[in-house]
Length: 289
Image (cartoon, rainbow, N blue to C red; front, side, top):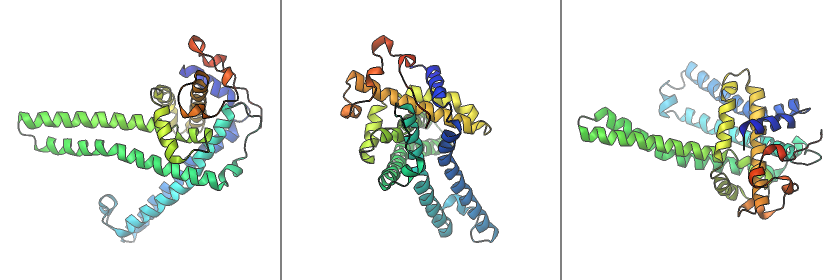
């Protein structure tokens, strides 16, 4: 599918709902920034009153610093996970043909969604950390070999270590792109467990990460500019939700053996097939909530 068509259709979906959708999309980012700033503020106070040395921030030698890091991390994940799922759920509804949208408080106050979103966030971070381990290992090995390389054999091993580090990082980035679709898939299949959603996401996004990477590349500069962050983040998340919805409906229409065919789509017949698989022929009509 074309990135320009995704962006165009996602912009149409936001007509009349930009302010509300923007607020929902920015809530996870605001929560993340709040706890990051709170952690930095606590570290500044500990340094000011001499409760720990500056080196302890990087070495982990201070028990107070470790306790603060653990508590802040738990609070950050606990608050951010439901907000991220709520944003994905709302955007998924926006990209579907549902006549009404679920109120945000109802999503956030649901115990089932809270448990599943928290479990999904923890499992995603664990899988991502495990996938990053090879890159860290090869990177440390490459730096060690580079500092002690005195002959051709050691230089040869150093080059291979750096190459393996680059390959491992690319594999980790590919996995992160796949896991970015996990909240949207959970919104489509809320009956699935977080464990199953993770593996279903990795299989579902196989060969389909190009669209998400293209969207991220388009909105990268507006997001890092800070000024364009609210609009760019909202457009990016809406386009990503639309992309995932189209992929699911394509699977349902074509009868691919994926988890998405376990339930019928309301408008699966509207997704074109073959050479006519163009977004502009698909019907994504929404009504004002």
